[in-house]
Image 1 (cartoon, rainbow, N blue to C red):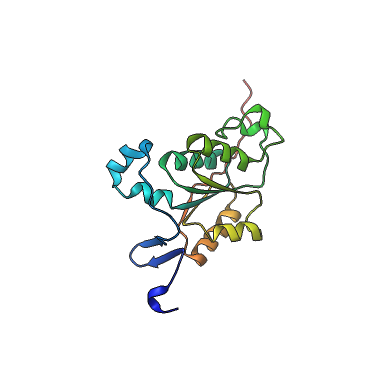
Image 2: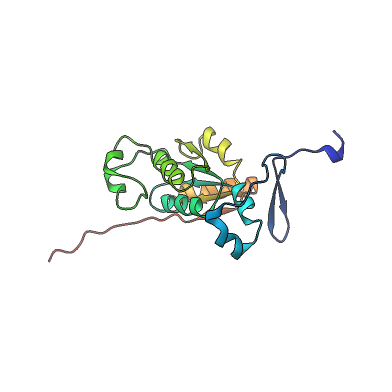
Amino acid sequence: MGRNNLVFRRLVILGDTIEVWHSTQSSPRRRPRERLVRQSGAIGPESDAKLASTTVAVIGVSGGGSHVIQQLAHQGVGNLMAIDDQLVEESNLGRLIGATEADIDITPKTTVAHRTAHGIDSSINLTESRARFPSSETIASLKEADIIVACLDTFRAREAINAFCRRYLIPLIDIGIAIRSQAWPAR
């Protein structure tokens, strides 16, 4: 192919900032979504189309991750990846957005994320990966992400994801939390 005939899905440009260019061939021009009119007015007329073509991977979709999935869906991100290998547990019900008692011990957390995102916007493409990083499945999926949000509890996993993102030049937002509880004093 000649230089003028190059086809790409995504091009990452590194400089003072990181720019991600998406192929105009892969996403047809969409009419702005009515529910995002105020947002587009605040951050620009192209924001809806840019967000609709963006892919964000969320690793760990329980406490913090379920909130991230919900907000990304509300903001109009068109492609989400929910990565988590666990089922809903009873202890998750106090913090996992969209989970119900009926989900305990039978529903993958990624399925709850899918249900939550589609409840907000049925046009969202949400890919579920029910595996743990760094499985070959999660690595292949994450290479397609424009941004990765790590919502994990352990420093070892967060460190590995950070190294992966540096290697593949993918911006990372790390909101992992570790909660260490102590026994409450007797009264």
